[in-house]
Length: 465
Ligand SMILES: Cc1ncc(COP(=O)(O)O)c(C=O)c1O
Image (tube, rainbow, N blue to C red; front, side, top):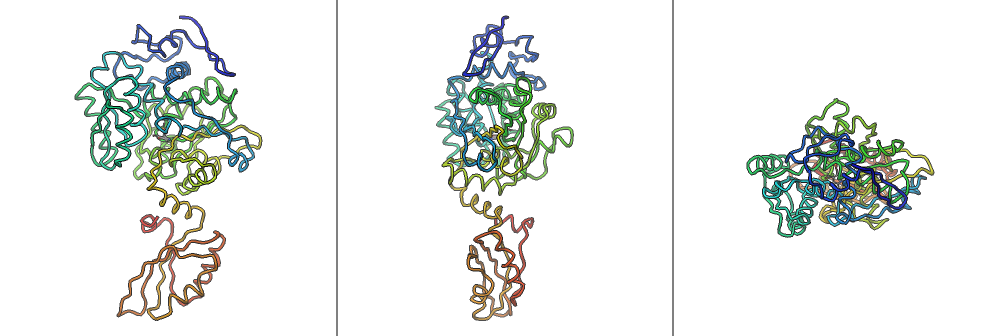
């Protein structure tokens, strides 16, 4: 084994020649990796030992392996985010991958390293979204037959994308009503058929593939950023980037952003082990994970990463700003990092900050809900139960005396009942500015109508928003 190197723009990566050979699939001994890399991972085994952590060298080898397969996505300076924070903010545009998310990196890195014996029995995964698309693309590129287990709820458009990217190599099987059912079906398939499972995050090769993002960012920037903010679901990207940066650029501040309704990595770090969250909010579908992986958890725990939780409504506001100001389509998980930067991460003016925009698979039918949640987040949309006196002119009085000049009725549900003195109406009001709320509440108090505000933590409110 000998030292070798590759030079990429300003960055010189020194790696073992053997690792380079492995990266290109030229290894004649797929059963082992070099002893110098401290991995001890048996590639010959169809299922690798999940306790084996990938090393920085594995990630560099993956970086070489993925060249020409993944797109080197642009790293663009964001005027909007730079002005808002005073820092130099760069956005890593993984929405511009052929599968519109970074997930291709990990899926390809797993399948490309399987031994020949695995080819006959094929590969299998469970996913409703981005991982399945990366898996399908990798199957087509590498000539593997794959099966994707999806929950019944997976929209037809997503199934069609998976099939199109698989170019005839991938079959979709409905594996139950929920993602958990689909995951169980895929495990059962792998046990029955001997197909190799391709995990979405909790696998050393998946993690190494996702970690290539950090290598690419440093290469494009010409040096390491001061701060890297990235999204966290199961923790694959976080674990991969942390592994490489802690080894090669330990000074980088690494911030993982989780959706507030599914902060499973923070929960695991508090508990000292991964645990199932009872109730998760699935809105940020890519990153809403009930339980993080054992391996991703251990790496996050030992890497000194910061975690922040971002409110789903704040993410919606960021999706709309990305769309309307920057002309970028981001899915909720894709907008997580920049939303976190604006909301939860304090940076010093002049610092260089990179945020990962991890995916752009946003279904157009979701925008109505995104606008609604964003208005609530901005404090501009509120719901009330107004007990109207059942007499002519009551609604006109409400409009004239209670509503302010910039307040708009966005929802009004009322059923007249003939034998009562009052009748409740459900009223949604959109304010011109969030500061107008105080005046509105005051005028409601002064009116002769009984008005009840629906609090944001009420189950009824969740039904509305
Ligand atoms: C667009 C997007 N961002 C972020 C994530 C979270 O990634 P990880 O599971 O590697 O933490 C996912 C996971 O599917 C995703 O699809």
